[in-house]
Length: 234
Image (tube, rainbow, N blue to C red; front, side):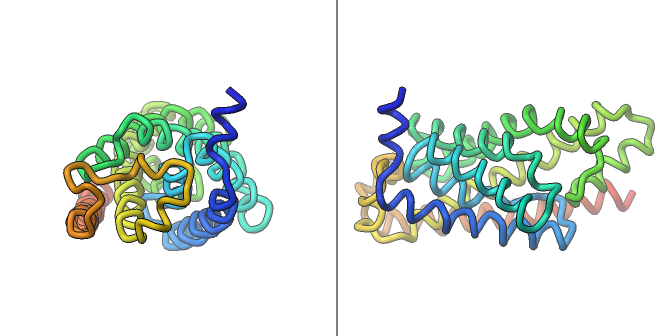
């Protein structure tokens, strides 16, 4: 086990982790200020997970929320177990070959979303009473007003927002990876996990996958806006 953990870390891993943490906090804080019904605070975590491995991803997620909570927003700290599990699961999915084409990345995002929903629900209920600083709490509050119990409202909100958020996160990370030079990717511990299927690493294949990923992200953002408008606009 110790050897497997050590295999996730080399010099480039330790360089990438603080960059990934900065990406997580910057985008996550912006989304929080804008009260959007998603999070997008795990893009850096997924990047580390797929390029370096699940343990590096878990460490990045845990450190992101810990530093975020200490330095900027204390309410971010209790979510570190969720962030760690996001990194771990994203890394596992990459190990199983689910980060090699855009549609497999969609599957990765969905599996990570289910994991995040399961881990985050008790935290949201017991520590925050279901209402957090996230924009998704508007949905929870609306569902509570319709007569749903707190567990039902939080679970419903999670299963509405988490897939959109985590699939978007995974697709953005995928687009970033496909835009990186192959020489750069080759310096990370797990470069084979992000090789494009059927493209043999060719730039054209990578670009096609990157453009598809960006297109899927745009569609997901439009879907999230439509969903929020229909839920809250009545």
